[in-house]
Image 1: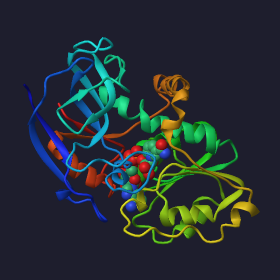
Image 2 (image 1 turned 180 degrees about the horizontal axis):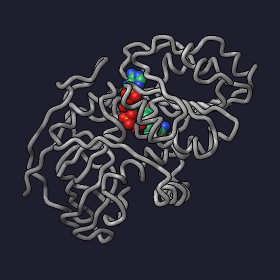
Image 3 (image 1 turned 60 degrees about the vertical axis):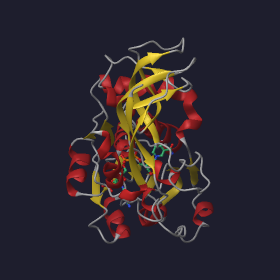
Length: 334
Ligand SMILES: NC(=O)c1ccc[n+]([C@@H]2O[C@H](COP(=O)([O-])OP(=O)(O)OC[C@H]3O[C@@H](n4cnc5c(N)ncnc54)[C@H](OP(=O)(O)O)[C@@H]3O)[C@@H](O)[C@H]2O)c1
């Protein structure tokens, strides 16, 4: 028997997530049964979608169970295997518990080469957030030279890749982020043409009119709420909107209303498409070769925040919902 540390959902949040929504537990791990593997977590990804999963509202993924460990995309090492597909010492990626160790049936796990890149990159610039950015830009926004592309949460795990891909496609790219350092990084390192601070800027319409004088041809939407409303009103004819997320709304107790004048969609012949990246896994190979190539060629920059220790995961997650992370947020578990 091995002792493991795990973090369970102790309470469903109403409004902002609070520390008492989590509980750290120390439990003995049951023996590994036929078909199972025991995985020691190395890195745990913290992602905005975990917030809706803490509630019981209908969504594309089932809610987390109360008093059970939360789960998240993770990289870990197989320490014991009774599953023929995995051997002790394999490095794997998949959904693991917020825990030092996870007993797993092997379904949905994928082996990765630990020599290929730093392990946490498989959760960020080589992983799900980057794949999300790639899909939304290449398949929905389709930015091109002569156009203006907008990206909200411009320096987040998804936004930073979306903005750079839009720039590489030749568009003028404008974004918003939650502090001046992030905005400077967006312009100096990620190649955005302009980025405004959505926490200090009061009039989103006025700043967008200034930074996007030709209007907006595509919007990669990560934030929702008032930023989205202001962007929506400035979409050009035949504009495309990839609705990736709405992080500003995840902690709202009451739903907010949509932008006024929905007839705009007809008048301007807009395409608005919501998407969930897990519906597009068949395109993973294309993403890896495209984005992997850009990384190898030094054409993509990435930022990450690494938090040391599983015990800090709840605090880090609460911070993510307030923009305290800069780029992909991961927890170094061991
Ligand atoms: N559709 C899909 O399949 C899919 C997949 C992955 C992610 N997503 C969505 O994509 C979005 C970005 O995810 P991510 O992985 O890039 O997350 P991330 O790296 O954690 O970035 C999220 C950023 O959002 C900003 N933010 C937080 N609260 C905000 C608020 N109230 N108002 C405005 N901005 C706020 C913060 O940056 P600032 O400091 O800049 O405010 C935060 O750092 C989220 O909406 C997420 O749910 C969707």
